[in-house]
View 1: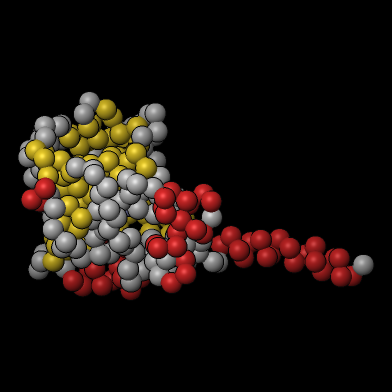
View 2: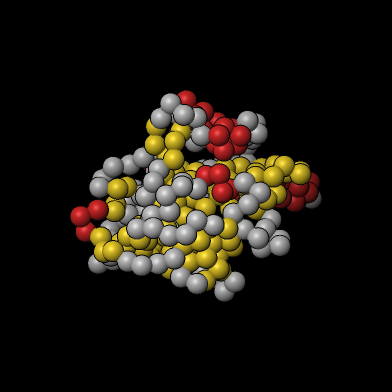
Length: 257
Ligand SMILES: [Zn+2]
């Protein structure tokens, strides 16, 4: 009888521990990117998908295209979500005033997060960091806007404000109250970009994601990237994936929002 009681008491604790303390996937070893597809059937696209991201963008092998990208970002309330492998700002966006208009379709801002080094490469060159701004259309299609960071003496003001929020060390959600985050401050002035169809770069690696990689990088200092690596994660970039016949398009200029 006693044994049953103990087991009964222990079971919820075990379930809690497996949900919260062990990452389901990581960036190295047996749970790393080359094994994601085998970790659970829900992640099989990571291993079997043919249109995966990130990719290496070869500037000698891109097509010029026309397309319209209008970024409508403005100050917005957010939540800070600390996960095992990242930290993200999730936007409420209740009145839907933060969106991107791409090829005459609206994609609403959901969250923004960072990877170090950058996941996409340009001519095999990785950048020290990238911001991903995840946007979703009314019908569920995803568009991820990638902003590359390059080292400079100029600190990135937006990123500095994020670092000053005392990033939580454990998996948790931190409410930011009335604090307004303005994602528009991350967007480079020059709106030229590369675009192609790919996937989420983290499990479940779902495909049919429109990627928009801004050509102009924004500045960040080595100390800022180091602070992120020390407080969040040392490295969280999936290696580049084969294009498998996909073409990357380049759009020279567009309208600023
Ligand atoms: Zn990302």
